[in-house]
Length: 179
Image 1 (cartoon, one colour):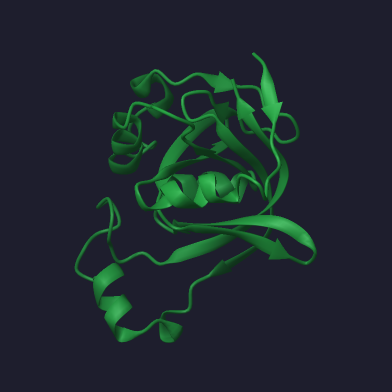
Image 2 (cartoon, rainbow, N blue to C red):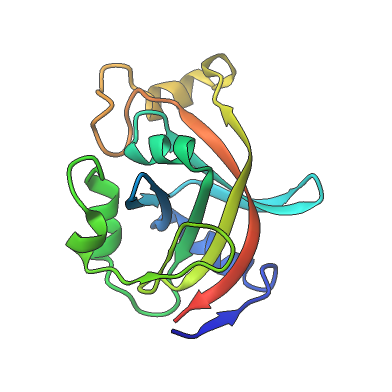
């Protein structure tokens, strides 16, 4: 498989623009590879290095994988793709199923870290976690607490539930089109 290196800052908008509809964050630990749809994230510079900050709820299977192996890939679409990938990876848990197999995803060997890229969403960032921060509920506005963290909704619910997010700051160590 050929990879085409990209300039992170020239392509930054291609990672951020589709976030509203979802992109994939993939984690790997204990022999399990798990892609998860995310719709919250940001790209910037922290401590003089490029970072992708991903927000993962504490109750998610992916959160546990990131605690075991603090590396992840971010995969965004480049052109046409099967949107059902994002639906399944955003509504099903890796605790209960192998989402890679269920979606027929093609794993691409990473360049620097241990977590593979996803060929079907080929715009790829490889990230190594350099900082993590659990959200402080006391610092969240009452409106956002009510909207995004309803306390009556269990952790297993997709989308909005009572679990807070951990911000995982991933130093971008490689950027490419996985092909």
